[in-house]
Length: 224
Ligand SMILES: Nc1nc2c(ncn2[C@@H]2O[C@H](COP(=O)(O)OP(=O)(O)O)[C@@H](O)[C@H]2O)c(=O)[nH]1
Ligand SMILES: [Mg+2]
Image (cartoon, rainbow, N blue to C red):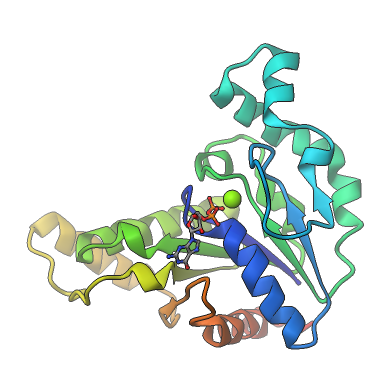
């Protein structure tokens, strides 16, 4: 089973690949971790496959004479060259995939990184709590989640990450303007029945996340 962590820069992808991986190991599962972020300076976990063993951002900038943004886009293309090496690490119970920092690289590149993990893959979209101050912020992230799901075309779940940073409760129904209400109604129509799970690097919500992952595979008819 492949878990692909997707979310805005700083939403906690790398931290979760580390911590949720440890949680799975404690439950007795065998895991492997794959890092696809060539721009990351240091990782808190040991990656079984690390794209930086093949290239780093400064190397691409130099080799192709590109600025940081162009080099990041180029890096997505280059990742596909290592498909076979990546696939060698799919033998464990769970493979956790750490995607590049910026969500743009997943959403706005003609090559979809997620294609590498479609078989028995699940995207976990992180909606960081520090971006959510009110209902509008929350629905903005839910819209983004739907865009991600539509784009990647594979099973996805969404979770609120960095939940310890969620300062106060807000009412999801408290939307003031007509446009927000229209979006709320559209989301209600599109919404698949999923519980809202809140997780943090300190372990909060990991049991709930695990149940959600398990149930997602059940509904896809695949329990392996
Ligand atoms: N308070 C808090 N900080 C977190 C949590 N998860 C990650 N962070 C911090 O947020 C920053 C970005 O996390 P990172 O995992 O690198 O995000 P990424 O860009 O999505 O890979 C780091 O400084 C992390 O220590 C969390 O659950 N709570
Ligand atoms: Mg990261």
